[in-house]
Length: 225
Ligand SMILES: *[C@@H]1O[C@H](CO)[C@@H](O)[C@H](O)[C@H]1NC(C)=O
Ligand SMILES: *[C@@H]1O[C@H](CO)[C@@H](O)[C@H](O)[C@H]1NC(C)=O
Image (cartoon, rainbow, N blue to C red; front, side, top):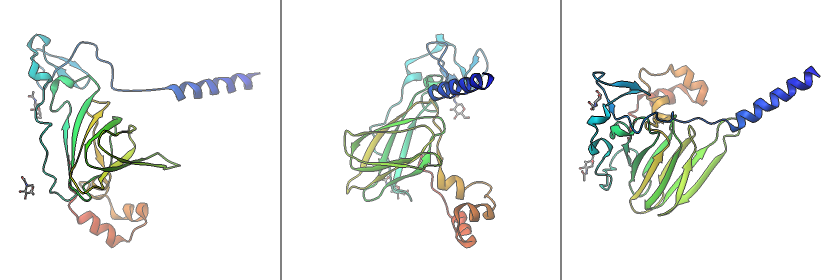
């Protein structure tokens, strides 16, 4: 009987966790425009809030996302972020945006993850081969070739990429379920960390020759955001 209750409890727990969810905390006020100064302010949710009486339209505003960015760089892509760092009024609201520009013939937003956000992306120009990989043990790859008007979702935390397989520039916009999604570019974090990871760790982890690891660690890893 005890065993049966235990089993029931375990299955209820499993059920509960299969429905569990999490996100940026819900705001406790209309808005909380981020400020750095603690003077005359209240600390909520990672940033200090500006006195709401001093709020102005500019606190919720960003301009220039129509402007193509320069993609002449080692990866051939540039990400223009519009998160709480650019729009202070996004603080506590759990949402942000980015513009992605890709050079023709292989502009790449290299494999990366957003530790705090799911991403939903819409292509407005060009052709993008996109994909993400699920967590262990399956490491299942989902990919799609996207054309203007196509939308794709990258679930929170999963490694993903976007690659311009067209002959023209590609442009996409992405929304994120966090005011501050964060970016971990895999190659940059692993081979370009500061200070460098002990090469023996990477030799074993990536099944590489030590000279290859040292070569990778000596490279400059461009950050496209
Ligand atoms: C807050 O501090 C950051 C980093 O020092 C700075 O970039 C930003 O402009 C500051 N924001 C305000 C509203 O003062
Ligand atoms: C783009 O960036 C490259 C490399 O920094 C530079 O040489 C080039 O002049 C830039 N192009 C434009 C249109 O600004």
